Length: 331
Ligand code: SAM
Ligand code: DTB
Ligand code: SF4
Image (tube, rainbow, N blue to C red; front, side, top):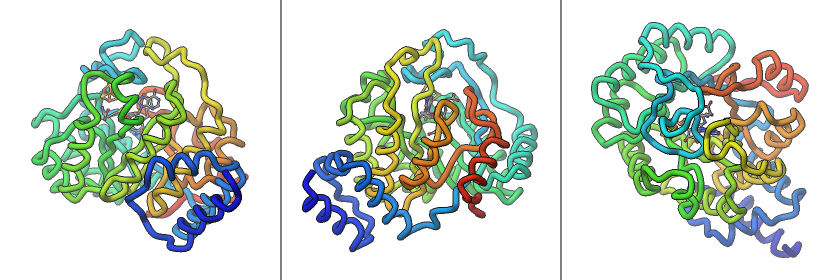
């Protein structure tokens, strides 16, 4: 891209500081194509207009219902379609969940995210999840759940229980989606997101990078997220964790700089959203993670486990933040 175009794009993004919902694929493609220093400069500029760049929001994840999922998401160790060795479990007991949340709070997490391997929740299970949300909120933590597809009434029920965030990812571009998942559509995903939004719950929605997608699929994914009527308040960008037994276990690893670029473009196009450096940190060097923070990531999952796979240890993460002079964000 020429310097003139570069400067023009920068002006458009940073002079207004505006949150735009009319991003075109061409504009997003142009951002991805910027020379790395120009891209990082734009991302940093936008980041600093909206956030303290030294602060990182910390969320802890707990799998409240593991495995045995009827969906066939090609990346997921919890799908019943693949032989991964993840043992399917029942929905956890409410008290046990609250004990875990208290421990997460004591270790410094401000948000507790509960994930269930469901296509969509049954009404009786939803009542138990609502009790978990109420209990975790009573500890003074923010709550997030990810339970699969929701209808309008289910979203309203979660809102009544006091839920702060619902995680539901678009995962990739509309075009690549059916290569990864066949048991539901992009449209299904968008419908759930609309139900969550209509219920007044904050949206946590992002995707995965490194699933064998093309560069234009990353453009398509970010464009889909950045053109939602309201941007997700939280945008998790996951690096695929290749799990043996899943169809995506043996794909070619992605250039980590392309992952950093994806974070930067998410930051620029969704300037007021929290961008989460999500799954995949264990396979990343501290230096790559530092680049992600420079690119505008300001949230991480903290704790030794994600849902079924491992995450860097808490001591390692605290040491990394300290080496970078960064601090956990208070709620
Ligand atoms: N069943 C619910 C759903 O799919 O919406 C909630 C749980 S699901 C595990 C939440 C998200 O985790 C997925 O949308 C995907 O983005 C992410 N995820 C799952 N497996 C992953 C993997 N191996 N690597 C990176 N991200 C993964
Ligand atoms: C998200 O985007 N990433 C988290 C959370 N939302 C629920 C899940 C990552 C799961 C990684 C694979 C596993 O541990 O099973
Ligand atoms: Fe099930 Fe969610 Fe895993 Fe897909 S990503 S298989 S819906 S748990």
